Image 1 (cartoon, rainbow, N blue to C red):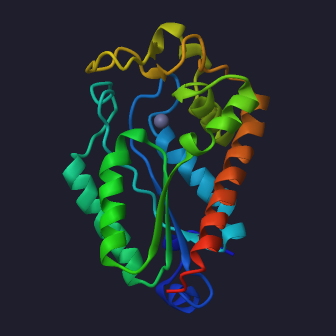
Image 2: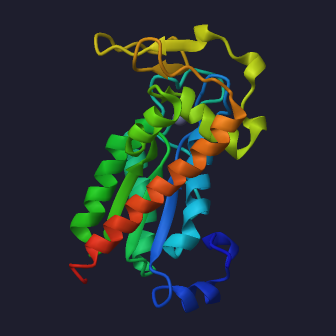
Length: 244
Ligand SMILES: [Zn+2]
């Protein structure tokens, strides 16, 4: 069946929620520079995970929140940012709307690390005010071990893992010809640099550079989606012990 909420009519939603479906997946990302991958990478990956797992989780998919809190990469052409307080309020209103319409399990699939702290505020606020179950999942953290096993090294922002995931969605979303290793910057806890001088952000010396291997990409994304789906299923099962 159709899983995207905005493709359904209100009467279909009325018929489905909450009696037949009570889980909603909300992809959230941003638009920012990603080396030689598309500016919308942080939106496309959580959307793909949501599409891959919605049927198995018996969930609907809310429209993606495509704009987020972009920080050190904001000055790169084509990037957008939302001030953290505005983002918290806006996301909070979306979460409240989902709670008002009787979704019991609200699962944010986050694609962008810059959103994390402002997102956490909105999620915690919802938890305090409403009797719903809510989780924000930061896919690249959740699958860190899978990334190491799959590629034999750690990933990075617009690095090996993220570039592979978006390349698996559509090879046209990456441009290997544009890529140069000089696009990469090794992150250090010793400095905050704005704008950060590379749009591929690496976290371990010599690891995480994109490799543009289509086969590795095509086998990576399903593993990521599966692991995220497994995690969501496990928390929903454990939440059942509360029964509200
Ligand atoms: Zn990203």
